[in-house]
Amino acid sequence: MWVAGVDGCRIGWIAVLMRADDPQAHRIVTAPTLAAIVDAPEQPAVVAVDMPIGLPERTQGSGRVPEQLIRPLLGQRQSSVFAIPSRRAVEAQDYGEACAIAAATSDPSRKVSRQGFAIFPKIREIDALLRARPDLIPQVFEVHPELAFWALNDRKALNEPKKVKGVPYGLGMALRRELLARSGLLPCGLIQSPPPRGAAQDDLLDALAGLTVALDIARGGGQPFPDPPGRDAHGLPVAIWTLRS
Image 1 (cartoon, rainbow, N blue to C red):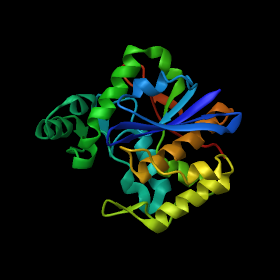
Image 2: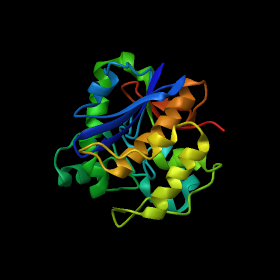
Image 3: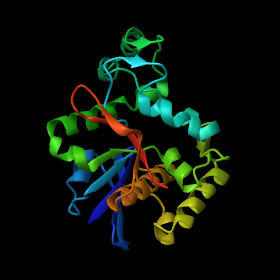
Image 4: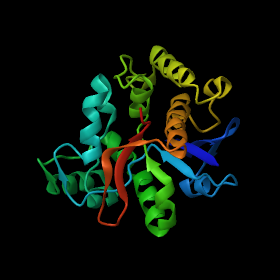
């Protein structure tokens, strides 16, 4: 069985594919679409992707339930968990329009961050893919890298950021690689691999974090927040997954 950890990158998506029963069988790929990854020759049975799945019609509080549940666990890293607004706001193509719709469909009223708006095209892509191909729903799981690292760090918040002012931070990147190595789930050579063209080192690191969750799910583990996952109006799951302790 093959599994995949996936993150967005400049040219589309970066994925690390691995055989669950043979960690030496792996490859790092980039693709313009998520469909190209789920339909890769390896046919990954579990795909853990760092992108929101399942959109609310309205939001109560600071985003979806999964976001509200995991933020307190992450300490100073909780700012990495964006508040995803309503489906109508995510579907808006213009930033001002997205802000207006988000404010009208949230309680308390909240607009959209620029960082959040930047990932809306990828949220729309995964949403459209899963709605068009519901057979993929049982094998595609939403993850968040910092929640994966929290689990790998004995369920404690990390004390170093991954980035500072948008630039990869050496100590934080090294800490996360150390946690990946300490887990014993991934080959050290893979953890130290350079990213392929079109992806950054932190994109690869996030995909590797997702891969650890995919491996855990494939082996009968995995923990969703909330548990059990919710469902949106289109039947898509609403939960962020991490490794089970």
